[in-house]
Length: 440
Image (tube, rainbow, N blue to C red):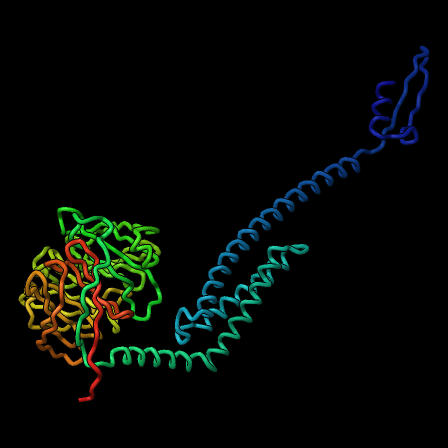
């Protein structure tokens, strides 16, 4: 009896909860009866507590899952925000013309992001610094785009047209002369940085008309081959070039054929080795792009007379990027091609009557190709010109003094009106002068 009573007390029952009765039988033995309270209500309470605990845990994990989902959404929208910010920065800086901007698309994206931000705010109990910061940035960029759109409609298109007009007039002004008059005496700058054994290659400055870059480049064909080059060296100043210091060597993974390379708008344009492809190596990203030049002769088929494997010769002038080459269809006569510097596509071609292997080299000035030929060890002659502006070619005779017998490369730069020449391993400059403009 005593153990039972102790258990009853341990379960929380009081003496008043227990009804105890007893009696003696004839033999004097005591019989006790205990009436315990109904325990159903206690079991119910325990079950309710267990169910509540389960529901609480379930709700907790559901909220955790929602928070994780919101976190992922926030991360995604932060990335979208970064991309959108970059696009707006490009808009502000004039990276693309304003008429190309799809303001409505950008505004739709911003509206969608604002709606998502509102949903996130309402779903999260209390404030969230990350969401609040992101929402503020979305609102700021919305205001910025609206201002840009308004500014564009009122002013920018007019300004852009004016800028394009000024650029065209500048180009025309730069070419407002009567053609090539004379070539200066040669200025021997120095031996190329790889030494006298490396005879052929190219050098110069960025040939993009209007470029303010002062980068000088040198690319020499590999020793004992004169067929290909595999690197280009860049100098940030003329002084560094002269002192052979502070340079950067860029590897050309798709090796270039011949010495017809040129640096144009911070990209090296050249003929990819053993192919008809014009290749473009971006100096900033090291990305290489290529496009086939249809029917171009290669592998020394139609190279210049004093420069091996220069079947495809790139050139730059006041009017853009050019390529000088020959085909079987033209029986080896020079073809002049205007090249889209971005896509490498041919915009237009002009056929000449000059046999390319009979020419020692060529260059472009204001859309006019000038061809040279070997006279003797000390003289070269510019003997032919073809004007792509008038579709006419003619003979002329302008002599160039030389310090060595052969020209391995010859490139014009429209920003300083100089010819950059590699002649028997040496870097050489010539300055061009032009006839006065005549309306006759």
